Image (cartoon, rainbow, N blue to C red; front, side, top):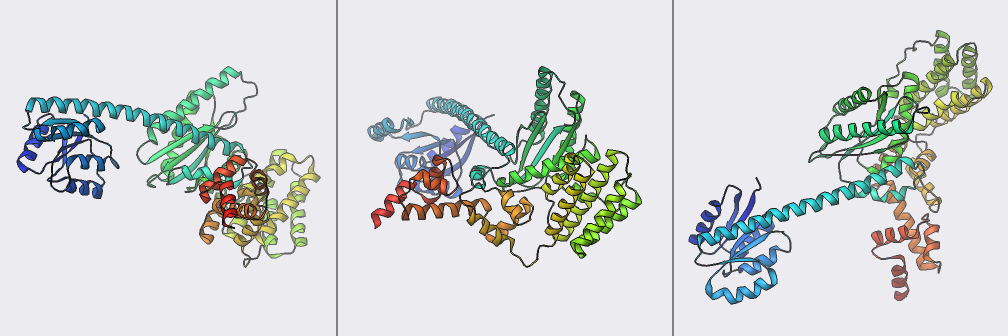
Length: 535
């Protein structure tokens, strides 16, 4: 039933109560949300309470504020229909107002049947307007969703997005987000394209049905889009932080099982920690892509959480000999307390032990075990969250090595880089280093990864630390400094706008001009003209 909220305004209490009884007699859908003796009283109450309503029934003549003025003032902030109650001596005055505002009216003394007819007409119009408004809103929401999905897709496809090109992330709702990556475990090289499309459509339907049911209400929203081949991304929004990591995992478990039941595939799922700034997406994407590579070690058909790398214990896994386990511990000890020569000596002992392994899989497992232990030690040492890139590099060591000599060289260089990360002086200021790096590279493509790599920090942790220590996001800092430089160039040079745009890192001049106007309040040309006129 469509409830129609109604306000009654009349300076005569008897008429006010009579209108109330008439309205209530028209059906249960009519709800009286306010009764007032004067237009001013009604106006102030509606503005203070910010209350919405559907119909205003008001007398014309009242002492403080007349009915027509009340309608006019409330129309500035509220959307509603109005029914004017008028005496015969007001009629000519009322006719003029009706031509301007097209309001319904009824003459005093009020005829019950005519009143009910008017009320029914108003009701039909309100319901029709609601339906039309709802349709428009749904179209707007769908258009917004489609645009947002396109932008999200570009972020996951493009691994070198300049940080200031993520300005659109401000348009996303406030709340707690979580990014999820779903990927099939099987390869599709011999699969017919029509079968591939059918399976992809089936998985997409499962995602839409499950999350449409489990994750679509007043406080939760989701976006999904395609990755490469049979992989998919999900972005979940929990505005009130009521959904736990365990509940999210349970929903993903349902999805994984449904895909396995309805398609020939198993899937692995990676999901990260919660975050509030959508501009963190590029670094979190990298984390999940790297996290999913754990299936190379632990097998597929699993759900991997971002803290999985910290679950490796001090116990040697099956397949790792006591000698390899011992040499790994010697390397870990040397990394923090010994010079490079001692570290390399311990590493040579490790190479000696694994060189005798007869199976490539055993060799790969030993190298991965060493790398994971080093990464875990680095995390403990620094107190930082996991860096996905070092793990990716570690996995690639065995994949890209052409022979044992290349493998040794790759492991050695990777390990020494990790040692440098551990030995960064604690009294250094990585945020100041990051600022200086940004200032020195304003005209280049600046990504979160580039800045974070420069200060040896995990991208997501770097973004959080930067905002905590400086009071602004990396995105804001980059944009602000680029535009400050642009303002100086507009003031002090006669360079063309497109030259200045490129000078401060924007190859798209239209985007630069739009961004400049959003931040400065004027277009670059207007800003230059204003500055010249002041001179």
